Image (cartoon, rainbow over all chains, first blue to last red; front, side, top):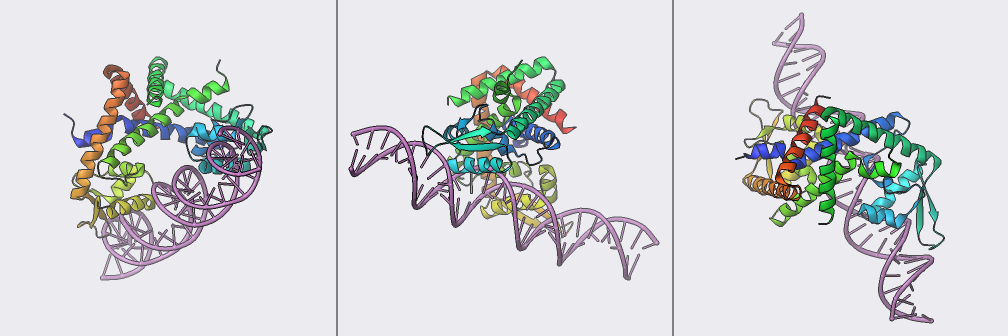
Length: 148
Length: 148
DNA sequence: GCATCAAAGTAAACCCGGTTTACGAATTAG
DNA sequence: CTAATTCGTAAACCGGGTTTACTTTGATGC
């Protein structure tokens, strides 16, 4: 029989939120130190949807599930930082293709590096085996929730 | 040997972020339907730091780890919605005490209810035993990270 | 007791990321 | 060809966060 206080402190939503913030903060700090001081959480979310060889703006937007205006703002900002570039599609002159610039590709490597480091530090804290099964369950939960 | 695409899609930061957002969205939707349509993620974070019998504003702020101005804004908004009230401390006339109003206490019950429902739905998806061990590991990770 | 310093809270200006409403321009369907 | 749809942009706004600066009150040293 849990009291209110206990629920508030220990429910899984709080744990997930706290850890996801910690993860992002930790990763961003590493990225900033390696020459990209402007990095923000929102950037990472967007960049994760841009493929190596470029992606249609509209599909980036659709994958993120936010309004096209919101995504556009972030992408324009990243363009301003020299990470992304936009080209007009040959197929459809309304459409835009989002691509990494050379600097953007460097950014990407740094970012993925940071992510792996933080992930490793988590794994160290928990032990590799336990960490892996935890991760598998998170992934399972994620995929099941997507189906709604 | 993972390729970049694979890392981007499967690192634990993404899983945590996705799930925590899903959890909050799900809980807030339930809360909105039960008579508190104004609820926002930031409210919940703040309210979680206010005890049954009231808490010093300064300790709420300190527990949240954000600037006092930011927290003040949220609290004023919650005051405007009739959820919280502020009183001057008897001990220190600079200080303020944050308390739930009667409506606020109703809100709290609804919110905790919603949280438990969502948590239960997660547990159902994963199986109770697996869910519990996952949660324990998340909590462990959380507490170890706090120590820095 | 007083001067000084620290702490609590507030105010204002600003930034970032998201929304809605509205629109132009290009493509597709009928 | 016309109509409807899709792609992107613009502008106004909101919520939540920051920094800088300030008042009021309390605590400390002397």
